Every structure is written in structure tokens, then in C-alpha cells.
Length: 371
Image 1 (tube, rainbow, N blue to C red):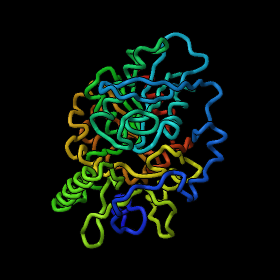
Image 2: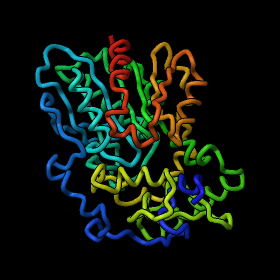
Image 3: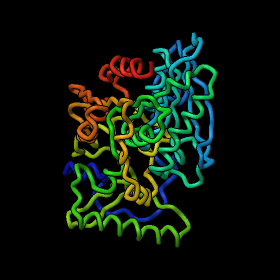
């Protein structure tokens, strides 16, 4: 399978998907559907809670009135006013996965950390499920800052943001617009607006971009006529004849024998015991088919220059297919953005491989910039 085709996340054969409702989770009889052993021992989380950390389920509303579900991680020996971090990502994941792991680790190191489900996903509110919005999901970060700033253990002048994968572009965008965020770090960064509107490494031609727009526009009619929201590829691939070829899953139910390395690495996290969660879009289903429309209209990080004099630290795996996103942001704002390349790591390794995630470097960055 061609690499760019895989990065469009074609789930099975590359044939165009039918516009039908997905089966319920109970109907998923694949390998991941039985991935319960880890969840049973960790309360539905993909990582163990540190013995020195307390985790509490919390809720708060963003400025659109949507209730955001989050987990608050606090050091058990917390005293006085502590620095705090808002944590979210990857795109299509939930707080019980990678963002929770990061929050747990930062709380172990003395931070108050809040891992949240973006609006319309996980346990957060929003009537239409599994839809993304660069505007609303950016707002979710600011709403999380609101929540932390009112907490008795938090020094509201020492709040930062830690983002992973597809929520990283939103974190950099909100940090440029919300100066209450004093520092921001990203890991395995994705710019979802660029990804959806231009394809991996900007490979879409002008003609292909128009085909994607036409596909999304037709889908609006289909959804309107049926009164439902279809689930299809949010990064729209093309078949060998040059036609859009969306599928109704982010990842295949079973891994093809000839799977490319990128699909293989995503599958190994989301569709196995390692990282599977039944509320994760990437583990079970796909985004609503018209999700890319708002990302075409909302370029992320347009005002990255307004982040200064505050700082950003971007971490990317040396072998990550997404590395170029972080490198391009660094090139745009070299005085503001620092870049760390992790040898021997791909994109997904930095979701949960604690032997590769540079937590000491991230901790040092926040210690300095949240002082």
C-alpha cells in the first residue's frame, strides 16, 4: 500500500465505502473487541495510576455551553499553589489513553494535570457524536484553563498546555490567543487543518482538493436527506483511478498481512490491548464524514507569532511520518519554538513508550517557563 494512501487511513481494500450506519461496538468481534484484560486491571484506563497520584473525574463547560469531561490528576502530597497543565490528544483518542498517561506522569512530578475529552467525543457532551471542530476543540483548552485557574491547588499564573498528536495544532493555536497559557509543549504534532485540506506532506493537487470539497458537499446532502451523520474518513484518500475512496473506519478491524508501517503502528496502539478503548474513535469507528469541512475553513496556527515571548517545545520521533509538521512550525517561529527529535521513535511510540518519551526534558521546559 502506498504510504500516502495509508495516511489517508484506508481501512480495508481501498474501495469506496457505502454510506451505511456502523455496527454497534457489541458487533465488533475482532481482536480488539476482546481486549479487556488490561482495562479490567486498570479501571478502563490503558495505564496504571501512580501510587502517589490521586485521580478525580470532573466536569466543566466551555463557552459554547458544552460539558467537557476530564480527569484531574493531583499529587497526593500536594501543598500550597502548584503549576498546572492542560493535557489532550491524540485526535480521536480519549482521556483514558495517552493524555491520561501524560497527566499521570506530570502529577507524579508535582503538577496538577487535567486530561480531557474534546467536545463531542468520549464522555464529553455534544449532541452529534464524534465530530471535530478546530474552533470548539481549541475553546476546550481555554475552558480547561478556566477550570484549573479556579482550583484551590493551582497557581493560575503557572498554567501550561501539553498536547499530543492531532490536538497539538489546537494547543498552539489557543496558546497564541490565550495568554493565560504560559507555555505549551507538543508531542508527535499534527496540524489537522493542513492534513485534511492538503493531505500528507501536502500531496493533494488542486484538482484533488476540489474533489474532496465536492465529496464533502455531496455528503451534506446525503446526511440531510437521511437525517443522520455518516462516518467516513476524515483524511480522504484516493483510489487508483483518482476518485475519492473513503472508508467507514479509521483503522481496519483486523490488520492486513501487507499493512504498511504507519498503519501497523497505529493499529498496534488503538486496536490491541496496548491502547484500545471502546470510546476511542480510532479504536472503534470513524469521525463524522463532514468533519473536514470546518478544517478547510479554519487554518490552525495562523497567529503563531503572538505566542512570543512565551515559549513552545515540540517533540517528534526521528522516524515519525509526522515529523515535518513540527519542523515547519519551528521554521516559522525559531525564536519561540524549540524542537526535540527523539532517536529511534516513530509517531505512535511517543503516545505511551515511557522509555522514549523525554519526560525529563518536558518537565525541565515547564519548570523553567512556568516559574
